Image (cartoon, rainbow, N blue to C red; front, side, top):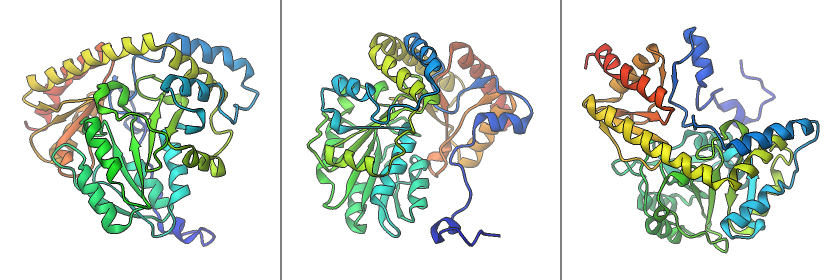
Length: 368
């Protein structure tokens, strides 16, 4: 029975979690996974300097985190050569998306995204009572022109694009993304999710322009920097847009341990570059494993490889389940026709080889 004290919007929504944790899945199956290759985490871990900084900060955990998010905010400003007032920091991109939607979306307001793109954004829009409009991918790519056309058609308040893309690993050029920004209709804000940008070539990133009120860009320490559990993300936009976050954000939401870790990780660009080399090698190995088993790896600019199984969603789901039975945790896109694929996150070499050993057996289990 629905609690009648809930708001009408909350009462209308199902209780749901966009991603079931691998720990929950392990409890359900009664055994741990041998290889954790489904959550797009960074198995290589953060910089040792970040780990040390977090350990040293623990003695002060009795204190709240710094609500202004200093000195991390200033360090990010220096790193990107922009003003600190153009940066907001929050509990990962997920938390920042939630604040953004609360700021801009009311009941019935139109929001545009791609069918099959990041589901947590949709989750926040539903919680605000927004009207979500989806456009199909163009092959394995989000379709910027179609997104803009739909935004104009429905009078969207927000239009979302991830570049590089999750779940397909594809990427658009900086010029294509800039053309989309330039085409954003009046009254709309483009949400550019760049969670995976460090893995991609610089040519995929338009220049940062904090004078432009048409776009907000989100980045994170969860992926390339290896700090997913610390929950640190940040947004970059015009200072007027950024200042809006201070109206409703949880000012103590970012804990001081995470702040210390992110600050130290940002300072250790040498370790980041070493990590990117490891990721490149692992991507190539996973692609080769797919090809060795008659599957098609898609080009990836991320820390995962999306693999076309050449059949339908039912087959891909059965393959995900068969790999789980053999102790290999992976995920797959949810929406057709993307769901013909599986998605394998980068892991340590030993984990990748476990996937290599399990994949042909799992394919046999599925009758392939």
